[in-house]
Amino acid sequence: MLQSHRGVSFNTSRNIPGGQVFSGTSMLELEFAQLSDPGKSRGHNEDFIGYAEPGTPEQARHGWLFVLADGCGGHDRGEVASQLAVDTLVSTFYASAAGESASDELQRLVQAANARICNCTPVGIASGSSMATTLVACVLRDQRATVAHVGDSRCYLIRRGRVTLLTHDHTLVHEQVRLGLLSEEEAAVSEVRNRLIRSVGSHPMVSPDIREQELRAGDVLLL
Image 1 (cartoon, helix red, strand yellow):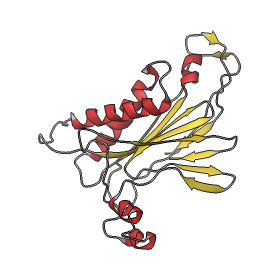
Image 2 (tube, helix red, strand yellow):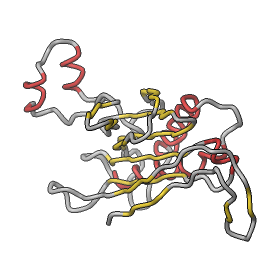
Image 3 (cartoon, one colour):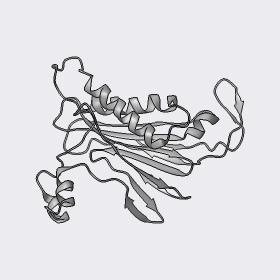
Image 4 (cartoon, helix red, strand yellow):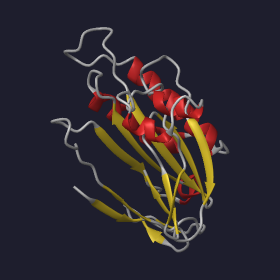
């Protein structure tokens, strides 16, 4: 199912549920959509998508959050891990301390998602069974995108028809290419090209890579 939404720019008075009216400061005006498909390899969908949309001027100043997670194939209950990760980030995004940078906030929230997955043993799954997921999250605040990722879920910037990859895959072959052990062509056909070296939930601690990107009118971000 494809869902399309128009974001709110807080530059005029706006009614919110309950009849309250507020006036805010101009922030971001955006449109977004989300689409998920299980693909051709598996019979069920291990993706999960979520977002946190500001509903008050204070939340508008804090920004928007978009997050996508893809449960790791070959692990138990990847679809559970991906949902736990997304739910953790979305549900706690606006509870962050005032003044916390987007980079620090994403670092903390990804660690919280990692801990929640590591500590979760679903009903019917033996103790010690592993769940893990990739994750890419983007905070939009003050005309800037802050992107955090773990695994091989990606973020692209599309600007005036030019596509730029803002993340790099945490995979074995990517590391081999970086070290000069494989060429890009060899990596593309490697039998282990999908083997992750980093994921959310696979170890007690996780280290997301974080990047900041200035935004311009008309930019498109693709997670």
